[in-house]
Length: 146
Image 1 (cartoon, helix red, strand yellow):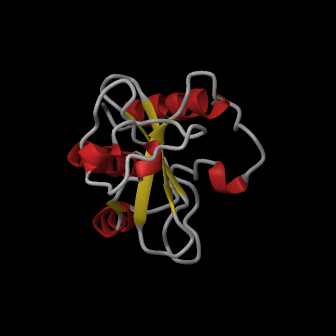
Image 2 (cartoon, one colour; image 1 turned 90 degrees about the vertical axis):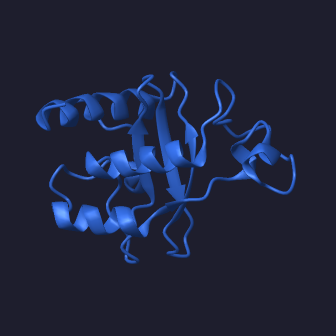
Image 3 (tube, helix red, strand yellow; image 1 turned 135 degrees about the horizontal axis):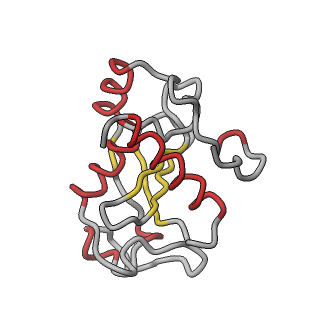
């Protein structure tokens, strides 16, 4: 197994058995991808009021547009394969990771208010978390027969 990156315990993938299948199903029905204009090259295309991406933020639509449906599916598949951090006191993991069919690695993050709303962004190839997520994704997909 790949070495865990960094020392931030909130940004670590939980063990494969962290939640039961029933708990994962409940989590999937409770979380919602809402996006953030700070991670969009063209925020108005996503219904955000201002075209105001932050220059220091990754842009999830830099390479290709990702619609709301696909973003929600990425969050759901991250939950299916157990690529999330330990759930917090509010029951939601701070982070959920996923890998697209094109091999892109995404990180979704929730706020601290326990709403179950997430925004996401791609991880850069150079980010150590990118390699870690991809290795765990591959391992867990193979274990699931995918």
